[in-house]
Image (cartoon, rainbow, N blue to C red; front, side, top):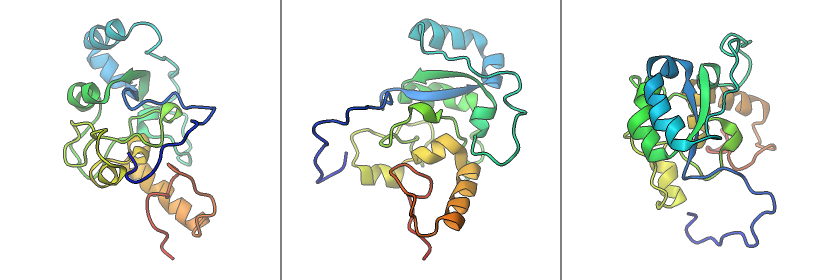
Length: 186
């Protein structure tokens, strides 16, 4: 994916469980309430045991002090499931999240199983997965960043402003970290 660069060999000894072939989706409680039969038929019965992860209590949505980085996807989450990107974007995304405001991408990924080479959907069409065969430069230009897919536009913008104010010289930086996808304002 990184044109002109060599893959790490040997691979790191502690590998992520993240995969570009399945996204770590936070399906909202509202989706489950409105589409429970579809959820059972197309996700639970198809995926088998292990994919649905029910760790959201009834107080999750209200346990917020407005000073944390959790997305609305985490706050309204009903279940975490692993779904292929093409299937999620074309069949479930529009039923699960409000996609009407094209300036406000909704955060929907659980960050625990996200790899630094994953991407959100195409910027021009949120119902289409970012092609894995594109170079990283193409993906960065034409696809929603993984950070925006995790946090959503509003929360990511707030976190980037905090990052810029507290670390304008980017002392604390890493691949996939908040703020590493843009140049310092210095």
